Image (cartoon, rainbow, N blue to C red; front, side, top):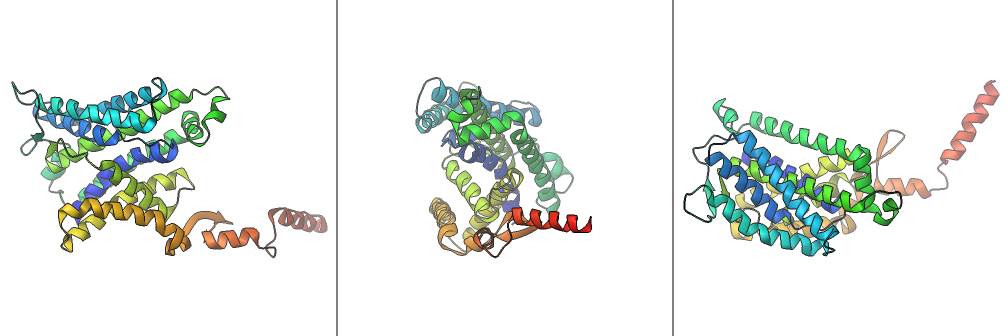
Length: 335
């Protein structure tokens, strides 16, 4: 269970990247299946070649930035459909990832696996301190992921971040104000895949190897994390939405852990993931999640969506304007 929690938190970094493209930018980016492996392959190869694990992890973030920028350029400057641009980059990265991992073996053009069993990683200090696979390690990983979340929250609250959000909501409108939507798209895709590459670097070090197939189907995991978390917590506020996707990533890993514990075949996990996404999409429309309290505050009180709608359209509830008039009348009477 501890391992599932740790892995879920690490995948929360990837979920934040998917959130930036699918929710904020409203862009169907499939680059993540390739950039995740690129980040893991780069970090693992650099560690095997003797580089510092922190530097290797940062390099995983950097190659993710480049992968996202390529997709952005194909879409904005090449006028290629966004979905197709992501697929083209993802396919190209497959061969590049083989070449990157091949640098660890002299005379080999490419290899599909890089082991890290005896190499030092960013998690080695935790293990050496005797805190590995414990609640302390969960807390340490959570603190690191939470810092990444705060950075994303800060970025989206800046003028540039607001321009990115506006690009996803209404591109033609924000471009009329002089904002370069091509620039905001390239930037967001770069940051998104940078986070995905960072996650790949961390996961490769956590599991002790990088593999060419480690990113296959990752976009479905990212979507499951985003949709599951926001189906429960909603996305009214940025800080809530980013927390929700991290929670969704942890929840997804826990569901997979419980499914395996119950005796399901590991080969069925992709089907389980697909069913989770379908359930997360349909339950808010049909089931009990309609009544889950949303973070919509009225007078400091959190109310459910059903109560909110009732309050908005109930004639017996005094409107804000009426309340102001009543307060003004009381003030005049006291005067």
